[in-house]
Length: 178
Picture 1 (spheres, rainbow, N blue to C red):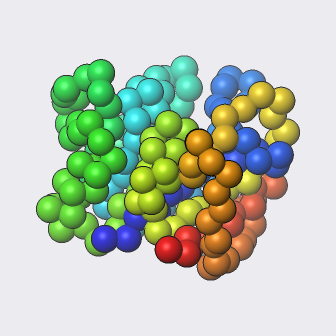
Picture 2: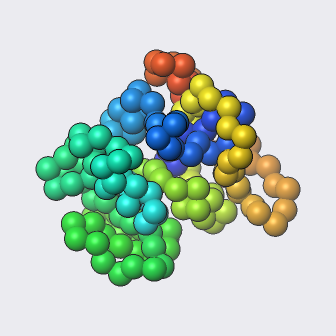
């Protein structure tokens, strides 16, 4: 199964943090929905999933619900603190998430939310491709994507595509060399 990590970064390379002052760009959210529909699934962490439910953070069209834009998709939440969420599958590890989606017959898994989830998939070398949407904002304090928190390690990547999504968002799509 091919695994694709989808993330939004700031122009200075931080993992973009959404807030009322810095909401996600519509073009990036639309792109996420397109990738999720193509994969038929997505994997997120608990905090990201909860943020996707919060009407103060996302519009009604963007909320994850039984009748929203993600209806009929396999949504997997990786969490160690909760056991069940109605309508989604909850697992405790990245590998469990991939195993579940593979058993369901998916050819691609989309890893889409939370720096902790992204970093756990990257550090366990479970990612084949990355899609970075670079938002036109500089962020003073932010989180980073990390492939190995204990060592200075490099992973070479191959550029697959580069395109403008609109509103200053640039998308970079890479394959990770293994």
